[in-house]
Image (cartoon, rainbow, N blue to C red):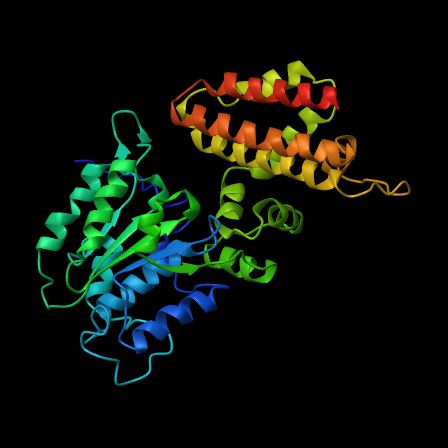
Length: 378
């Protein structure tokens, strides 16, 4: 009998280890220390919001904290119920032979609950949201006492994916938090969350990674890049190791090159090249690359806006295709504003179209025509 393959997880980047498997967190010492300080004082808040750019280590830190809480004997309960720890804790390391660790990694630890977008086996894709029923399922989880009276941990990855009803249901739970239970919300766009939800959480802000920290994170994820790829992905990912991994796994350098080449003839668009590129994204099988294309177009238009604010050096000689493109799109302060507005408009349209399952080929062609129209008007 053929073994059933595990379902995909929405919080795992294809081709990279799950955040729960990471052994080291890079570049986020401040956030770690804030949590450890609260732990040392015996005043752990019941709800934590980890915010920051996508792919900088929020999920890795949350899983590290979860393993720490579930393997630390006599961990302090919420808000200092048992007082401060008698011994100073300097890191989030856990005993490698603790029996809970294999259960945590296998997803079978009864004191840990993870809310994420579930996978629709029939449609072969992830659902768009974390639903109100998903959040309400926490009631039964909280209704069970931890076997040893220890902590119970909930991870929501990402809180941005919750529907309005789901967010309101969670808010009600936070008003009367269960004893010795800790909720960790991951958010890439905390400003979009309910203000009342944010106000009930203690926030840990994570920042973009430096080049060196990102290289170490990629090495841990067993992602090996050429020198040229490393330089390009560092620019495109803006300090996000997660985004750099996506670029590596989805041939991001080739896709970026194709986009730049297609736009090279602006202000007149090479329509046959645009159509050829768009047709590569037909069907659900290309959904991950379509998401990456949206990110890359967002980057290109953002760069067009930024470079338009910098006076052109008449003696400069752009050497790469993207440098030549940004020189072509350089239209001064007025152009910068136009490109920035177009960036916002296209990003919203593409992401909305993706969410409601519009034809990706049509969306991409519409995007190209909007860029052509803007370039021709400047």
